[in-house]
Image (cartoon, rainbow, N blue to C red; front, side, top):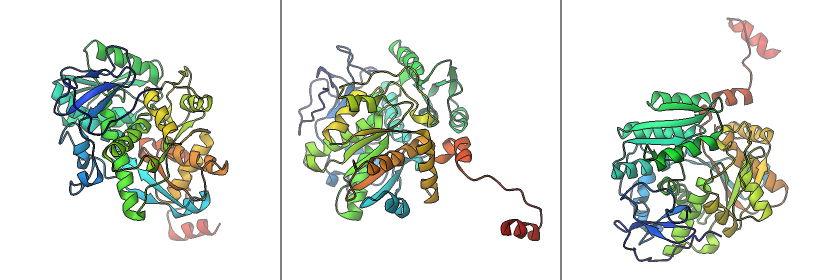
Length: 421
């Protein structure tokens, strides 16, 4: 299993810059973070993780403002290219809470970020690192949300942006965002995983700086979701949630939240028994993480063919699986696959509470429903479901899941007659 141990007051190695370095989760080798772009361990090819010589407590964040950069003490820089991002709502959904039958249920709505998804958290940090490295072109593969965020933050930072999308597989709202923000959009005759293979090779050749979640600094921004959930939930209930349920595509958020919890444990701010159970949800047509959990594997087997209407998680080769699988297991969580119909139903249920999300986001609620019905989630649990993107990210899916317009005459009596019928 990958080594994700964080030592309290870990001494900075010679490779560190201002107390920050990159460590390989497989072989343990350390690498300088800002001398040149680096995404994987050059020695063994393992995933890299950002490490620090000091880890935060909740007191560290007190009085530090709002949003991602409130948590600068747990990030490699004090500030970055910001729109701003973070500080997203934690919604109460009383009807869903009663229906599902948990002690509490809250929805962390990441669709309220500037470009409409959680990707903004990673981009504000990743683009800041790109500026430190002095790279000329940013690039990503995307199912849509990453491309929108990269284009917006790259544009804000005055950098060239290149996005590779699987042709015909990305929601129009997301393509429109990347286009308007000035990205160069390449539509690839292949799926997301093929796009990522190409972008990774471009990065290896020095043609672009990769800003998919393979980049360890992307996850540093995303871990602030975990800090926000714990802070706000504790403020409301004087305790931490028992479980966080989240959609899984590339498994970056699962890995990032686990990193946030491990850092707080390393500093003594959180007891290891208080870490919420990380529970991943995938669409049934794209569920390699669920397969790995069910079969007890340390890594996933790539699914070459994936299909789901939840386009944001239509991924067959989650690059952060080696970080995310230990996070699920070590926190006592699990993973579950849900049908597209269950996702659409959950999308409608959230909308009835005023929380509008794209299909992939609703997978978390669909998964919670399934696990609660199976008795895996208990009635006395405090649960937070993460929703990752706004409903306008995929307006066609929203329209298909919603009510149909009804034609009426252009006069009041005609409208009243129609309503009576």
